[in-house]
Length: 448
Image 1: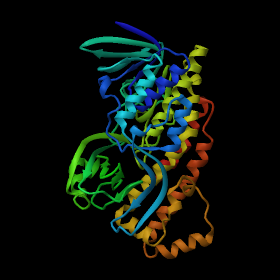
Image 2 (image 1 turned 120 degrees about the horizontal axis):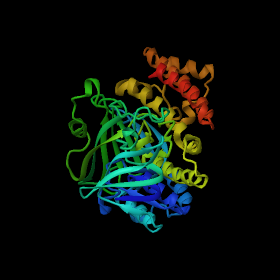
Image 3 (image 1 turned 45 degrees about the horizontal axis):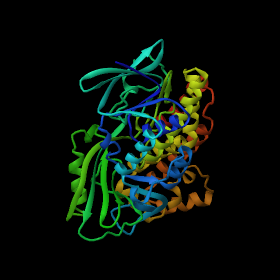
Image 4 (image 1 turned 120 degrees about the vertical axis):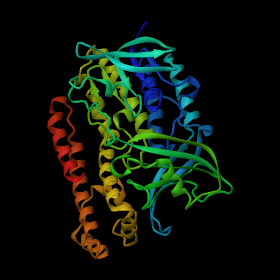
């Protein structure tokens, strides 16, 4: 059986549903495919934190309501970076919400369906269809019956495993990265718990660094309402950590903080940890959300970037379809807008994630106690600022005798400044991309 549409979207997570709403708002005929049943769409393992600024922007762009009262578990005001000493921490403003992903995801799905998006649930996509050098749809199986879904534009919103992107022939559209290796993602385990008594983390998301947790080295605690916390950890299962159980590492860390609680939900998943794909298009194809490594490499927050990427993808799909041109040149604007919205910031945060990984929990505690690392250092502005010689001298004095840490920070600051400058120069013309990419890769290779 062959199904046809203007746009076919693989995956009904936040990126996929946002893309569906965005495309449908502009009069396109959209098919949305997901392997889950309709009722389970939106039910995903994650930290559930969502930036208020991002979600308000997306809601306006899509002409939908922002998160409603029944979709918000708690409001967030602060992100806390904490070490083994509870008195030593850094607090950063982080205005947003703890979202009930399932309820919010179901409402977004209803918004899409109300715009005549066709949902095909319980359907597993296997491979892309490629004809004359262009992606023209996907092959999927529903109820043991194979079907073709053909479209002018295909959007891969299939999550970290990126079922379309990773199943493209290696020689197809060389500018697009098509692999998924253990270096590209982290395995994680998350619980939503209910305590016997209320907690002191209302309005806070906490990254608690621990020496016994593999890099990036923290367990998270997010205030999720009265007596409720969203807790979890994750790391890359490579090298010396390959045989470690993420679940067991999590439980070992939890013993220090919470032991008597009821588990509302506990599950594992994977999350991308690389910088965003700077090119996430190929002829006939746009890649969005986790499939394009759009999650923040430091905090793994991917909900907001996914919503933004999907919204942009729907708009760019419309522009290409109006022209009847589906090559890279006519989809390139997607990359340009993603870089402006969050791609530049996430490219910087990858460096910060590597720095914190190399410093480790014990040295991080030292740096915060001595005020070598300050609150302002952990912002995008702080990562790319220029310091006076007097400020640097003060840090040298405070950092003594662990001067190697200061050298690492200096190297990181240099890298982030260069990355920020190069991100500002992201090419509007795809033909200039390879030269631009070489500059970025050189910085990452030197630092990472």
